[in-house]
Image (tube, rainbow, N blue to C red; front, side, top):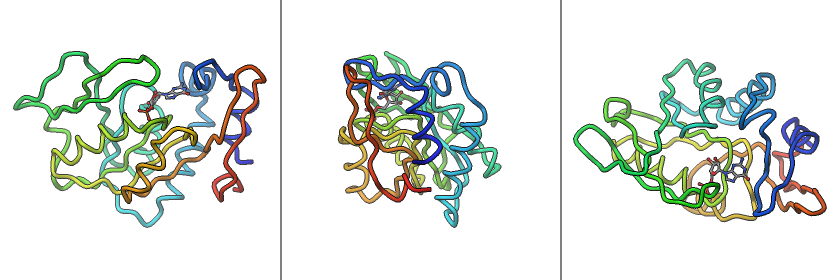
Length: 198
Ligand code: 5GP
C-alpha cells in the first residue's frame, strides 16, 4: 500500500452514497505532510512532461494544486463555481454536475488566466464520474491550450470518470484508486496497480 492508501484506511470514513470522507487531512483540515507527498508523487509521475500552468477547481483541489505549482514554479489557477455564470467576453464557462451536491454548477475561469500557449496539468482531490475534470478540460480547450496531464489524489474506480478519461487518451495519474467501499462494514479495497506498490 502506498502512503495515501494507508492514510485513507487509518483516517477515512465511508458514507452512504459512495462517499469517502477524508476531512481531517484533505477536505477540511489540511495535513501539509500528506499534501506535500501527494504533490511530490504527482511531480514524479509526470516527470518529463512540460507543464506551464496548473489548473484545479475550488475548493478542495486548491491545496494540492498549490503544492504542485510550487514544485513546477508555475502559476496555479482555480476554476470558480457559480450557479449562474454564462460565457461572456471576460470568461470561459463550462458545466459540471456535482456528485456531492447533486446539482449542476457553472464553472468558469476569467480569460486572462488561460492562454493558447498553456500546457496545463489538471489537478484535483477526487475523480468520480469525471464531471469536474471534463469541465476543466473544456475550459483549457476553449482558451486554445493543451491538457498535458491529469493528476488526482483519490480516484473512485467504480465510477466512470477514470475509464472515460483514459479512453479519451488523457494521461491520468491517480495516487489511490478505490476498487470498492462499503459504508456498513467500513471497508475500502484499493485497485492493485503499480500505483499501489510504491
Ligand atoms: P466528478 O466530477 O468526478 O464526478 O466528482 C469529483 C468531484 O466531486 C471532486 O472535485 C470532489 O469534490 C467531489 N467528490 C466526488 N466523490 C467524492 C467523495 O467520495 N468524497 C469527497 N469528499 N468528495 C467527492
